[in-house]
Picture 1 (cartoon, protein in one colour):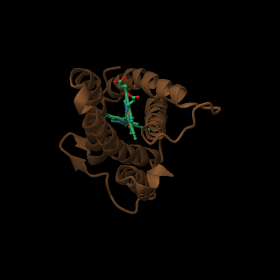
Picture 2: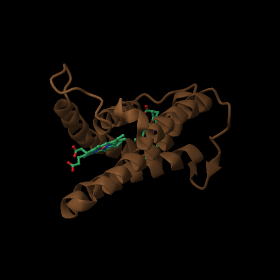
Picture 3: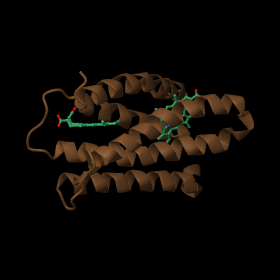
Length: 168
Ligand code: HEM
Ligand code: HEM
């Protein structure tokens, strides 16, 4: 398999595995990540940084790769790794919220996390060309899912932020 010699593949997989460990560690409170920094909890700051990375770098990627087609490879690399890093930050916020004994009634955050996970999974399958053309789930369908679900991310993240900051 061509990916076995690809350093980007192993780096991306390592980030995902480390993220899973951080989710488990945060959920079972092996380490304390819930201290207050200024007006928010530390884990909320992580979610703000992660959301900012996805929300700002994605449209930049979209515009820049059309303006500078020769830079497509490096721009895609930035897109992949900044979003994987954002996923790690957001996952800590998610795991901390899931470990709470009392849960808020609305679940915009849970919906959002499912969307981000689909983005990561479909992006990974696309980047490392894991799907087969002509298979039950061909690459073009996966690319369509990856790009179209981005709209859902923007809509729900806005509702989640406005709601949790008390504006909705
Ligand atoms: C993709 C990004 C994010 C994900 C996946 C996410 C996920 C979650 C989850 C799962 C919850 C538990 C309640 C629920 O299910 O709705 C939650 C709560 C919360 N989130 Fe997020 N979140 C994200 C971004 C943000 C951002 C950017 C902020 C910054 C303002 C934020 C602030 C909060 C707050 C304040 C709560 C606590 C709600 C309460 O105690 O009632 N989240 N989030
Ligand atoms: C988590 C947030 C993410 C969002 C919101 C997002 C969104 C997008 C969007 C809108 C495009 C289309 C750009 C265009 O048409 O020019 C795209 C392309 C792409 N994404 Fe993502 N993405 C995310 C994460 C990832 C991850 C984690 C990977 C890989 C592991 C990835 C791999 C790719 C690749 C390879 C393309 C190029 C597709 C092509 O031109 O055929 N994405 N992404």
